[in-house]
Length: 324
Image 1: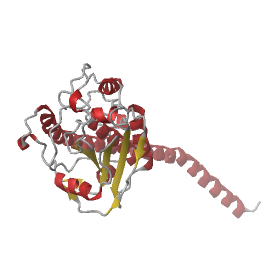
Image 2 (image 1 turned 30 degrees about the vertical axis):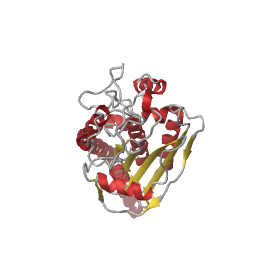
Image 3 (image 1 turned 180 degrees about the horizontal axis):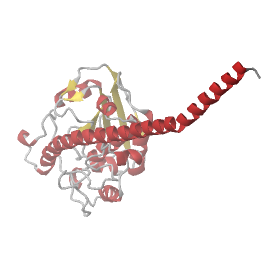
Image 4 (image 1 turned 180 degrees about the vertical axis):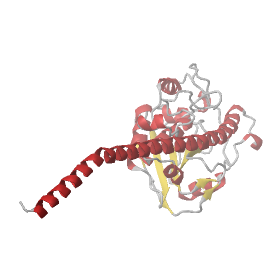
């Protein structure tokens, strides 16, 4: 072998040896970088969860004020406008849930006051569900399917649960007051309770709720609740998608229209969170006060709960039987 070739071979061997000696250091650096990225990602998710939970606490406080006003309307039968919930447009007679008036329907009454009409088989044998939405914020089909399945699971309607209406409308504004939402419903809602039919109305809008900019959903009266889809999209994370939150909010607001928790009755089970009235203290219930709580623990187990727990279900069954 020529002298030049020998020298070239030695240089190549030294270079290869140098690269080999650096390889463990390079691998260690890559692993360290990955570890930093994982820790950073978990820290970001945790901070995001705390931020959303904090916002939801404020949202729940505002919602509780709504429920307290609605509860006063149910309990007070003097018919004076001073006891009506703020923003309810011209409700008809105030409604107590007594055997004498369970065959009456006030679609603009207090939240929870139609719970017997929704859940019991008579005198309303059919339930019509209408879901209207602003064209820029379409409902998630999977979330709606879960919502409708939940209704069918618990209501006793011999003539079935039927979806009807479902109008698409143009956005009115970016911030909606109670009266704005009632006006949108008045213009677009197709179905009202009549004959053997009781109506449930869901409205999806863009933007936010003027009375509480952190709200993801709000039950406005006895037959209507609103979903703020843009706010739900803002609450998503890398591990919990919008449909998971949306189906939880849908079922949560549905529960309030059914009177949960203790809106129109006093449960024999101690499951109401005293710090957050009309919400469950069980973290696994869809009626938990912070159903949109996106903590790391919630992320790892698949998102917020969307089902009624055993205490909720016991209350529902007693409402159906007329015990409550």
